[in-house]
View 1 (cartoon, chains in turn purple, brown):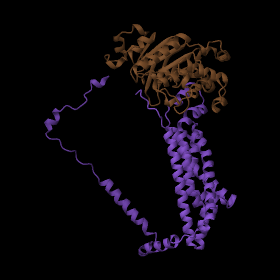
View 2: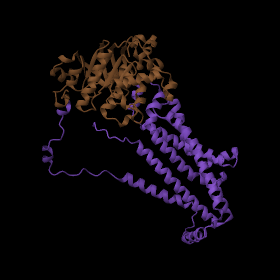
View 3: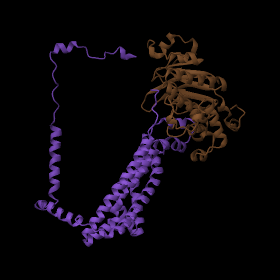
View 4: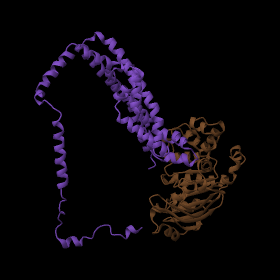
Length: 289
Length: 276
């Protein structure tokens, strides 16, 4: 109400008295410049201790070309059935890991969301997610190997645990971004926190969470190949073995299989995710506004 | 849905709360940031009154209406709904009180991706065991109450639609049905028509009036439009900067009264117009 009384613009007369307007003096840029120089020096210094033989850099393209010929000139398709079977094991590992990860991270993530769980539940959960995020899957798998031995199940377990860190964070961020209106209505009707989570937060967050679950599967497909390298089984183990045998034509075939299968699954999963998210958008435009 | 139905009868110890009387004594609300939203508001509302709360945005009317079901806790003073001291309730007893107070909102506040029926069943949460609501297995009786509530606002045929697919007016009717299925004794409405076009706004106000007259509910409705307050409510409370500056019959409120509440001259946007 006082806005009308307050002058909105400076009156033009003082400017006329001061003559043509001029820029205020430019703020000093010494600080940022010094900081940039220091950062640059650190970047350069950081490479010194690496003992890089710069001269061999020139030989790399030739070597790469050499290996490319070894790998892909005549891929050996003899072991394809075996490769497909191992791929299947890798995919199963990824799928099992994704299910475990999602099944754990959705309830834990919802509890970790602001406004759902109390602080003494929320904060420890967030720390747990952060700690898991800081540990690479391979490290978790190596630790698990000592307990459960060299099986694809170990890989699935490692993927399931390692994924919780990121997946849990995605869940609580999604739940926190849900509009508060429906939650307020459920609370106003006498609903408990669990009822708010089930009937206000879950319906709004479910499409995103489903999409994230599929995305976890896609990520796991790639990671499962890496876990195979340390012996968790599947296509990664086969790849690692044939590299050790130096049977490059078989390695070439395996690489083709890995890339094609991964891209195929990405494609299918991606299109399902797109459908989920499109379906989530309101189909009828609200014409009242 | 009369007082003799089993749900109300089963309330037993809640009988005092079932009365729709609301009493505020020197109620103050200060938000954590230090904003004083309500300053020493005292008023008493009899069961079955149709009351509008009028004021500009930021005058504290949203806060006032949310103190009554403790969505906003009061900082000092005393607030009674029926004979229950709202600020002393927590946990289960608070949820039971809220179960007796229906509320509708400017933004409708529906779960847009679930069915209309599921949204209305939210009104039964405080009156049924948790496992039923969490598993989505309402009792036949709760379902019947929800169906009757939907029927009473005339959108039973949309029961299986996604709430998000409805128009604004339909959404607000679903929200009213949700509140009615609580079988409340008090109905709170926070700017219920501010997101609606004028004809829809009038029909929603008529629904509220009908609820008040037919069911004897105490209705407390926030409005910023003068003509709606005059036309649909019997008593008007004016808030300005968190203080109560008017309390009287809505029909008798003059333009000068409104100017005092708003703290500025009347403008065109203060009326909705086009009564049906």
